[in-house]
Image (cartoon, rainbow, N blue to C red; front, side, top):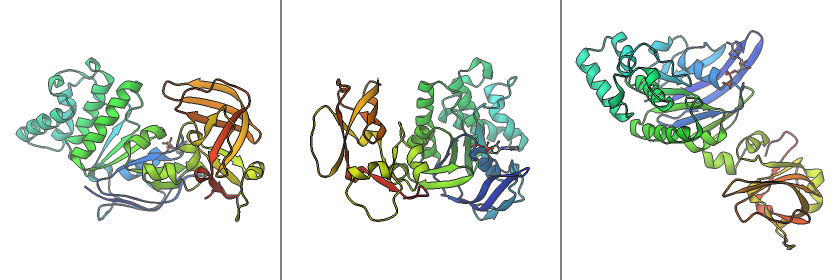
Amino acid sequence: MAEIILRNVSKIFKDEEVISDLNLTIRDGSFTVLVGPSGCGKSTTLRMIAGLEKQSSGEIWIGDQLVNDTPPGKRNIAMVFQNYALYPTMTVRGNIEFGLINKKVPKLEREELIKEISEIVGLTDYLNKKPQQLSGGQRQRVALARAMVKKPKVFILDEPLSNLDAKLRGQMRTELIQLHKRLGTTFIYVTHDQVEAMSMGDEIVILNKGEIQQKDSPMNVYHDPNNIFTANFIGTPAMNIMDFEKMKNFLPALNGDVKYVGFRPEHIQLSAAEKTDPHSIILLGEILTRETLGAETIYSVKTNAGMINCKSFSEPVDRLRNVQLRIPHEKLYFFNYHGER
Ligand code: ADP
């Protein structure tokens, strides 16, 4: 087990800085998820931690060891990728055993490790099969088992579930969370999917354009976003962000430098009734689209303050025109000119 520290880490590819002065501490034993849009630098960050990419400047510490010049094989990190990278001609056993043979682990010890790990990941009955005889989920387990037999200090997982269908992905998420609990080893997990990040991580690191926007618990990134980027990125549909100018007639007077007002679609009460409430913003609107997804319904509503997305878990509203939107003041987020709270 090990804490990982990145200190003033930058990465320049040709003349483009893709990671800028990153400072990040990954807690020992945590399940830390790096999340952000495609191209924001998640994989590059992982690859630098693993030693597959050398940072242009800064320091990387694993435990009490400065690993700037330590090759990947000596960092005691195991990586799992989305394409599994299994050897197709070898059996499951062969794939799991390969790294152990390379490390000159004695045969008896290898046998024991393979038995222990294949039980944990549920592969005991598949040890003699080849990868092409396995389902996507089973292949992913082989990749995990191969990482686990090395008993690494840190697991690095780069979008490991993105090749699986939605149902299996859900199941594998749960398995990975349980595996993390069981092993107690630091997991660093990369995904572009905020739902995956929120459901798996105990620490979420939100990256955009090579910079950390927020590092926090799932609850805090949702309830207490630092800025518009995080507010927008976490939650589906995204938070409504309105120009303060357009909303200020509906709001009590405010002090301070407010440029934008935000509120989440799920915090809006949409109804046909006309109620008054001194503690809420009341808007009138017309429903333009309505998408019913079983338990919830998503509306896009044209209001006197602009277009607004609403999400409701109650019975779908039938009426289209003259609907009322009630947004409690306590559910509002205020952002300054720089998009910060
Ligand atoms: P993410 O994992 O968040 O999708 P990456 O870390 O893969 O993002 O990439 C971050 C940025 O660095 C992107 O603009 C990408 O094009 C660039 N990049 C990544 N690897 C290389 C490379 N080997 N050479 C040049 N540019 C690269």
